[in-house]
Amino acid sequence: MRVVRLHRRRVDDDAGMSGRGRPTSSTTSSKSGQVISENWAKAIDDYLLKLRASGQPATTANTRRQQLQHLARRVAVGPWELTPHELLEYAGAQDWAQETRRGRYSAFREFWKWGKATKRCRQNIAKRALPRVKASPPAPRPMPDAVYQSALRRADDRTTLILRLAHDAGLRRGEISLIHSDDLSQDFVGWSLLVHGKGNKLRTVPLTPRLALDLRALGTGWAFPGDIDGHLSARRVGELAVDVLPSPWTLHALRHSFATRAHEIEGDTLTVQRLLGHASPATTQRYVLLGDERLRGTVYRAAGVNGPLTVNRRNGLEAV
Image 1 (cartoon, rainbow, N blue to C red):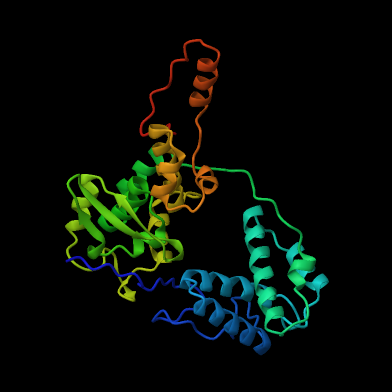
Image 2 (cartoon, rainbow, N blue to C red):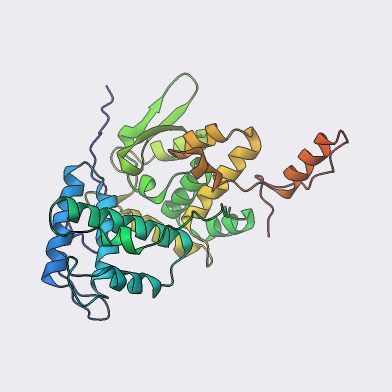
Protein backbone atom coordinates (compact mmCIF):
# COMPACT_ATOMS: atom_id res chain seq x y z
CA MET A 1 0.00 0.00 0.00
CA ARG A 2 1.36 3.37 -1.02
CA VAL A 3 1.85 5.86 1.82
CA VAL A 4 1.68 9.59 1.06
CA ARG A 5 3.86 11.79 3.22
CA LEU A 6 1.81 14.95 3.73
CA HIS A 7 4.22 16.76 6.03
CA ARG A 8 7.58 16.40 4.36
CA ARG A 9 9.87 19.25 5.37
CA ARG A 10 10.78 21.71 2.64
CA VAL A 11 14.25 23.17 3.01
CA ASP A 12 16.43 25.60 1.18
CA ASP A 13 20.08 26.23 1.94
CA ASP A 14 19.53 29.98 2.15
CA ALA A 15 20.42 32.42 4.90
CA GLY A 16 18.70 31.62 8.15
CA MET A 17 18.81 27.82 7.77
CA SER A 18 21.35 25.64 9.49
CA GLY A 19 22.99 22.62 7.93
CA ARG A 20 20.21 20.40 9.26
CA GLY A 21 17.41 22.60 7.93
CA ARG A 22 16.58 24.23 11.28
CA PRO A 23 16.01 27.99 11.50
CA THR A 24 18.95 29.74 13.06
CA SER A 25 19.11 33.02 14.96
CA SER A 26 18.49 36.14 12.91
CA THR A 27 21.54 37.82 14.40
CA THR A 28 23.99 37.49 11.55
CA SER A 29 26.38 39.44 9.38
CA SER A 30 25.94 40.17 5.70
CA LYS A 31 28.70 39.90 3.14
CA SER A 32 29.40 43.59 3.69
CA GLY A 33 29.83 43.04 7.41
CA GLN A 34 26.57 44.71 8.46
CA VAL A 35 25.16 43.18 11.63
CA ILE A 36 21.48 42.84 12.49
CA SER A 37 20.64 44.38 15.87
CA GLU A 38 19.27 42.32 18.73
CA ASN A 39 15.93 44.16 18.48
CA TRP A 40 15.56 43.19 14.83
CA ALA A 41 16.75 39.63 15.48
CA LYS A 42 14.19 39.12 18.24
CA ALA A 43 11.36 40.63 16.19
CA ILE A 44 12.17 38.51 13.13
CA ASP A 45 12.46 35.28 15.13
CA ASP A 46 9.15 35.97 16.92
CA TYR A 47 7.41 36.73 13.64
CA LEU A 48 8.72 33.55 12.02
CA LEU A 49 7.49 31.57 15.02
CA LYS A 50 4.04 32.97 14.33
CA LEU A 51 4.28 31.99 10.66
CA ARG A 52 5.30 28.43 11.50
CA ALA A 53 2.58 28.13 14.13
CA SER A 54 -0.01 29.20 11.56
CA GLY A 55 1.12 26.43 9.20
CA GLN A 56 3.13 28.48 6.71
CA PRO A 57 5.68 26.33 4.85
CA ALA A 58 9.37 26.66 5.66
CA THR A 59 10.01 28.21 2.25
CA THR A 60 7.66 31.09 3.03
CA ALA A 61 9.20 31.65 6.47
CA ASN A 62 12.69 31.60 4.98
CA THR A 63 11.73 34.15 2.32
CA ARG A 64 10.26 36.46 4.97
CA ARG A 65 13.44 36.13 7.01
CA GLN A 66 15.62 37.21 4.09
CA GLN A 67 13.31 40.12 3.21
CA LEU A 68 13.29 41.45 6.77
CA GLN A 69 17.02 40.90 7.24
CA HIS A 70 17.70 42.93 4.11
CA LEU A 71 15.76 45.82 5.62
CA ALA A 72 17.28 45.38 9.09
CA ARG A 73 20.84 45.73 7.75
CA ARG A 74 20.05 49.03 6.06
CA VAL A 75 18.32 51.04 8.78
CA ALA A 76 19.78 52.52 11.95
CA VAL A 77 16.97 51.72 14.40
CA GLY A 78 14.89 48.74 15.48
CA PRO A 79 11.62 47.71 13.80
CA TRP A 80 9.36 49.34 16.38
CA GLU A 81 11.28 52.65 16.34
CA LEU A 82 11.40 52.92 12.55
CA THR A 83 9.31 55.77 11.15
CA PRO A 84 7.14 55.67 8.02
CA HIS A 85 9.48 58.12 6.31
CA GLU A 86 12.56 55.99 7.09
CA LEU A 87 10.85 52.92 5.67
CA LEU A 88 9.89 54.86 2.55
CA GLU A 89 13.48 56.10 2.16
CA TYR A 90 14.75 52.51 2.34
CA ALA A 91 12.20 51.29 -0.20
CA GLY A 92 12.89 54.14 -2.59
CA ALA A 93 16.62 53.42 -2.57
CA GLN A 94 16.17 49.83 -3.78
CA ASP A 95 16.51 48.92 -7.45
CA TRP A 96 13.81 46.24 -7.46
CA ALA A 97 11.77 44.88 -10.33
CA GLN A 98 8.08 45.73 -10.12
CA GLU A 99 6.95 42.29 -8.94
CA THR A 100 9.79 42.12 -6.40
CA ARG A 101 8.77 45.51 -5.02
CA ARG A 102 5.14 44.44 -4.87
CA GLY A 103 6.05 41.31 -2.92
CA ARG A 104 8.32 43.14 -0.48
CA TYR A 105 5.72 45.78 0.29
CA SER A 106 3.13 43.09 0.97
CA ALA A 107 5.53 41.26 3.30
CA PHE A 108 6.31 44.47 5.22
CA ARG A 109 2.62 45.27 5.63
CA GLU A 110 2.00 41.84 7.13
CA PHE A 111 5.00 42.14 9.46
CA TRP A 112 3.90 45.47 10.93
CA LYS A 113 0.27 44.33 11.00
CA TRP A 114 1.43 41.52 13.28
CA GLY A 115 3.51 43.98 15.31
CA LYS A 116 0.48 46.21 15.87
CA ALA A 117 -1.82 43.29 16.70
CA THR A 118 0.64 42.03 19.34
CA LYS A 119 1.12 45.52 20.85
CA ARG A 120 4.75 45.75 19.77
CA CYS A 121 4.04 48.97 17.89
CA ARG A 122 1.24 51.50 17.70
CA GLN A 123 0.84 51.70 13.93
CA ASN A 124 1.39 49.73 10.76
CA ILE A 125 4.05 51.98 9.25
CA ALA A 126 4.25 49.90 6.06
CA LYS A 127 0.54 50.34 5.38
CA ARG A 128 0.90 54.07 6.00
CA ALA A 129 4.14 54.70 4.10
CA LEU A 130 4.33 52.32 1.17
CA PRO A 131 2.22 52.91 -1.96
CA ARG A 132 0.32 50.14 -3.66
CA VAL A 133 2.21 48.63 -6.57
CA LYS A 134 0.22 47.34 -9.50
CA ALA A 135 0.94 43.87 -10.79
CA SER A 136 3.22 44.00 -13.81
CA PRO A 137 1.76 42.84 -17.13
CA PRO A 138 2.38 39.19 -18.01
CA ALA A 139 5.87 38.63 -19.40
CA PRO A 140 6.16 34.93 -20.21
CA ARG A 141 9.61 33.91 -21.39
CA PRO A 142 9.71 30.33 -22.66
CA MET A 143 13.14 28.97 -23.43
CA PRO A 144 13.95 28.50 -27.14
CA ASP A 145 14.33 24.84 -28.01
CA ALA A 146 17.86 25.36 -29.32
CA VAL A 147 18.93 26.63 -25.89
CA TYR A 148 17.28 23.67 -24.16
CA GLN A 149 18.84 21.10 -26.50
CA SER A 150 22.27 22.67 -26.07
CA ALA A 151 21.93 22.47 -22.28
CA LEU A 152 21.00 18.80 -22.50
CA ARG A 153 24.18 18.10 -24.43
CA ARG A 154 26.28 19.72 -21.69
CA ALA A 155 24.44 18.17 -18.74
CA ASP A 156 25.26 14.97 -16.85
CA ASP A 157 22.53 12.38 -16.21
CA ARG A 158 21.30 13.99 -12.98
CA THR A 159 21.05 17.49 -14.43
CA THR A 160 19.47 16.15 -17.61
CA LEU A 161 16.67 14.63 -15.57
CA ILE A 162 16.22 17.91 -13.68
CA LEU A 163 15.92 19.83 -16.95
CA ARG A 164 13.44 17.33 -18.38
CA LEU A 165 11.23 17.43 -15.27
CA ALA A 166 10.87 21.19 -15.74
CA HIS A 167 10.52 20.98 -19.54
CA ASP A 168 8.27 17.91 -19.84
CA ALA A 169 6.24 18.16 -16.61
CA GLY A 170 6.40 21.87 -15.70
CA LEU A 171 7.81 21.31 -12.21
CA ARG A 172 9.34 24.03 -10.01
CA ARG A 173 12.87 23.55 -8.67
CA GLY A 174 11.51 22.98 -5.14
CA GLU A 175 9.11 20.34 -6.43
CA ILE A 176 11.90 18.57 -8.28
CA SER A 177 14.05 18.50 -5.14
CA LEU A 178 11.30 16.69 -3.21
CA ILE A 179 10.57 13.87 -5.65
CA HIS A 180 10.54 10.50 -3.87
CA SER A 181 9.85 7.00 -5.14
CA ASP A 182 6.73 6.92 -2.94
CA ASP A 183 5.27 9.69 -5.10
CA LEU A 184 5.11 7.54 -8.24
CA SER A 185 1.85 5.74 -9.00
CA GLN A 186 0.38 3.80 -11.91
CA ASP A 187 -3.18 3.49 -13.15
CA PHE A 188 -4.74 1.96 -16.27
CA VAL A 189 -3.53 4.87 -18.42
CA GLY A 190 0.05 5.35 -17.25
CA TRP A 191 2.34 6.66 -14.54
CA SER A 192 1.80 9.84 -12.54
CA LEU A 193 3.74 11.85 -9.97
CA LEU A 194 2.36 13.25 -6.73
CA VAL A 195 3.94 16.71 -6.64
CA HIS A 196 4.62 18.52 -3.35
CA GLY A 197 3.98 22.11 -4.39
CA LYS A 198 4.17 25.56 -2.88
CA GLY A 199 2.31 26.06 0.37
CA ASN A 200 2.33 22.28 1.02
CA LYS A 201 -0.27 21.83 -1.72
CA LEU A 202 -0.36 18.50 -3.51
CA ARG A 203 -1.22 17.84 -7.13
CA THR A 204 -0.92 14.87 -9.47
CA VAL A 205 0.93 15.35 -12.77
CA PRO A 206 0.87 12.66 -15.48
CA LEU A 207 4.30 11.56 -16.67
CA THR A 208 5.46 10.67 -20.15
CA PRO A 209 6.49 7.00 -20.45
CA ARG A 210 10.17 7.90 -20.76
CA LEU A 211 10.14 10.28 -17.78
CA ALA A 212 8.34 7.69 -15.66
CA LEU A 213 10.84 5.01 -16.69
CA ASP A 214 13.83 7.20 -15.81
CA LEU A 215 12.41 8.09 -12.38
CA ARG A 216 11.59 4.46 -11.60
CA ALA A 217 15.10 3.44 -12.62
CA LEU A 218 16.49 5.54 -9.75
CA GLY A 219 15.20 2.98 -7.25
CA THR A 220 13.63 3.64 -3.87
CA GLY A 221 14.12 6.84 -1.91
CA TRP A 222 14.81 10.40 -2.98
CA ALA A 223 15.24 11.02 -6.69
CA PHE A 224 17.97 13.58 -5.96
CA PRO A 225 19.75 12.63 -2.70
CA GLY A 226 21.52 15.34 -0.74
CA ASP A 227 22.89 16.24 2.66
CA ILE A 228 19.91 18.30 3.88
CA ASP A 229 17.06 16.08 5.06
CA GLY A 230 18.24 13.46 2.59
CA HIS A 231 17.57 15.38 -0.63
CA LEU A 232 18.97 18.30 -2.61
CA SER A 233 17.70 21.73 -1.71
CA ALA A 234 15.64 23.74 -4.18
CA ARG A 235 18.50 26.18 -4.52
CA ARG A 236 20.96 23.44 -5.43
CA VAL A 237 18.59 22.05 -8.06
CA GLY A 238 18.43 25.50 -9.62
CA GLU A 239 22.21 25.90 -9.50
CA LEU A 240 22.77 22.60 -11.31
CA ALA A 241 20.50 23.78 -14.11
CA VAL A 242 22.13 27.21 -14.35
CA ASP A 243 25.54 25.53 -14.66
CA VAL A 244 24.55 24.16 -18.09
CA LEU A 245 22.28 26.99 -19.26
CA PRO A 246 23.59 30.16 -20.89
CA SER A 247 22.89 33.46 -19.13
CA PRO A 248 20.26 34.74 -18.46
CA TRP A 249 18.26 31.50 -18.70
CA THR A 250 17.20 29.62 -15.56
CA LEU A 251 15.31 26.43 -14.80
CA HIS A 252 12.09 28.39 -14.29
CA ALA A 253 12.05 29.40 -17.96
CA LEU A 254 11.46 25.74 -18.82
CA ARG A 255 8.27 25.92 -16.77
CA HIS A 256 7.22 28.79 -19.03
CA SER A 257 8.09 26.59 -22.01
CA PHE A 258 5.90 23.77 -20.72
CA ALA A 259 2.99 26.15 -20.07
CA THR A 260 3.25 27.70 -23.53
CA ARG A 261 3.40 24.36 -25.33
CA ALA A 262 0.55 22.90 -23.29
CA HIS A 263 -1.64 25.91 -23.96
CA GLU A 264 -0.88 25.88 -27.69
CA ILE A 265 -1.89 22.23 -27.87
CA GLU A 266 -5.06 22.39 -25.78
CA GLY A 267 -5.97 26.08 -25.74
CA ASP A 268 -7.31 25.49 -22.22
CA THR A 269 -5.96 27.76 -19.48
CA LEU A 270 -7.66 25.77 -16.71
CA THR A 271 -5.90 22.55 -17.76
CA VAL A 272 -2.53 24.31 -17.77
CA GLN A 273 -3.36 25.95 -14.42
CA ARG A 274 -4.03 22.54 -12.86
CA LEU A 275 -0.83 21.03 -14.27
CA LEU A 276 1.28 23.94 -13.00
CA GLY A 277 -0.38 24.02 -9.58
CA HIS A 278 -1.47 27.65 -9.75
CA ALA A 279 -4.21 28.93 -7.44
CA SER A 280 -5.45 31.39 -10.07
CA PRO A 281 -5.72 31.32 -13.87
CA ALA A 282 -4.37 34.89 -13.81
CA THR A 283 -1.05 33.47 -12.59
CA THR A 284 -1.06 30.89 -15.38
CA GLN A 285 -1.52 33.63 -17.96
CA ARG A 286 1.83 35.06 -16.87
CA TYR A 287 3.47 31.82 -18.06
CA VAL A 288 1.80 31.42 -21.46
CA LEU A 289 3.27 33.19 -24.48
CA LEU A 290 0.70 33.63 -27.25
CA GLY A 291 2.55 33.41 -30.54
CA ASP A 292 1.99 35.95 -33.30
CA GLU A 293 0.85 33.18 -35.63
CA ARG A 294 -1.95 32.22 -33.27
CA LEU A 295 -3.12 35.80 -32.85
CA ARG A 296 -3.00 36.39 -36.60
CA GLY A 297 -4.89 33.17 -37.27
CA THR A 298 -7.63 34.25 -34.88
CA VAL A 299 -7.99 37.59 -36.66
CA TYR A 300 -8.19 35.87 -40.06
CA ARG A 301 -10.81 33.37 -38.88
CA ALA A 302 -12.86 36.14 -37.25
CA ALA A 303 -12.84 37.94 -40.60
CA GLY A 304 -13.96 34.79 -42.40
CA VAL A 305 -10.82 34.32 -44.47
CA ASN A 306 -8.25 31.53 -44.64
CA GLY A 307 -5.48 31.78 -42.08
CA PRO A 308 -1.86 32.38 -43.07
CA LEU A 309 0.63 29.59 -43.47
CA THR A 310 2.40 28.95 -40.18
CA VAL A 311 6.07 28.36 -39.55
CA ASN A 312 6.92 24.80 -38.59
CA ARG A 313 8.04 25.06 -34.99
CA ARG A 314 9.51 22.35 -32.81
CA ASN A 315 7.58 21.92 -29.53
CA GLY A 316 5.73 25.17 -30.21
CA LEU A 317 8.83 27.33 -29.88
CA GLU A 318 11.08 28.65 -32.61
CA ALA A 319 14.72 27.69 -32.31
CA VAL A 320 17.13 30.58 -32.20
